Structures are given as structure tokens and as C-alpha cells.
Image 1: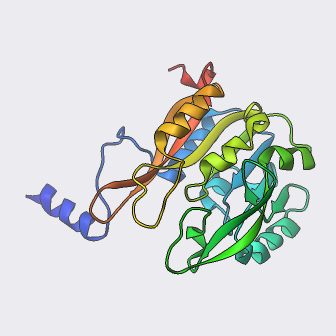
Image 2: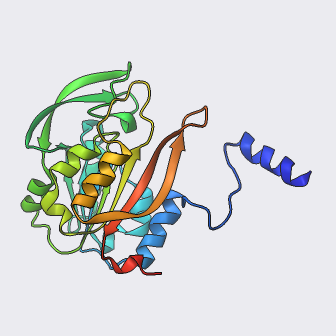
Length: 238
């Protein structure tokens, strides 16, 4: 009786009780876990940063790590410029779309900036032309070398980023990216789970863990964050 009542209270607030060892880890806890497990990265690259990814910054603080922050939605430029000035020695900012080839792209800016995307054409979106830069090109520009922690959250355009980052992937120790599982409604994306896993396998990465995740109101799984490591990674040894 008490257990069922407790569950109902949690459900009312959109929460639930899970086993301590049940996947997937909450996003914040997952990143903190990675920060204690992996080798210290020489660079942290955040693609789709909006005005900042607090969970990532909490695990890998700006003052201790070199950062490249990439955001296509220009409405976040001002807040990101503030971060760049505040951490001049460690933080670099690029306002562009990360894609497979350098050029331009039609980009859908949503009223809710965190839903802006190349693929998410919602009723509240407006189309703008956006400069496209390959991640490989950006890494050359900033002379990014050594061990990279790469995070990608670009509302369905993950494969665009990955196809322009083959050289960068060779330097990555860990890749954390969001994958749509059931892209319904206004989102039409080639970045489905199977395509991403297959591409990463071709580049010697395998699935290591899952973080967070979101479901639609009817309970159908919408998306989840996937952690990839190299096939021969020491992290896979239990």
C-alpha cells in the first residue's frame, strides 16, 4: 500500500523510482561517472551547446579543460561570447552548423532555441541560411590535438556532424551523442539509432553506456544519449 502510494506521488511530479543499478543513468550522474573513469581529456568539444551544458561543465569545469563550443542558433551568441571572454584561455566559440561539408544549410530556428535544427521543421520555426563547417575543419583551425571528449546534441543532425568529423573521431577517447529512437511528428532525421551505431562501428567505436533519455507523453521512447568508446578501450574491462 505505502509503496504504491509513493509511486503515485512520484508519477504525479513526473518522477519514478528505479533500481540503483538500472540503466540508464541520469545525464548529470552519467557525466560525473565518466569524469571519474576516463583519462583527463586535452579538449572537450560540445556541439549543440545552446547557452551552455551545465551537466558537462559540472563534470569538466571550464577552468580546468580546453573547450570548443559550437552552436548554430545565433540567439545564443551573446551568452556564449560572455563565456568566451570569461574563460579566454580555455574556451573557444563557433556560431555555425557542424555538417558533412563546409558550405551553407537551411536551418530551422525554433521559438524554443533548444529545439532548433536542420531537420526539426516545426510550425513555430523560421528558416535561415547558416554557415556550415566540418568539425575536422574546426579542429584544424584551433589546432586541436590529443585526447578529445566529444559531445553532440543537435536535434537529429548527429550524422551530419559525424560525417564531417572522421579525422576528429580518430582523436576521440569518448563520444557522447543524442540519438532519436522514434522521430515522430515534425522531425524527419537520418540519424536513427542503427545508422549511428553502424557508422561508429566503422570508425572503431562501440556502445559503452546510455544516459538520460526522453519519452513522448504516451510513454513511447523519443530519444536517448549514447556513450561510445573505442573497441579496445580499457574502460570496457570490468
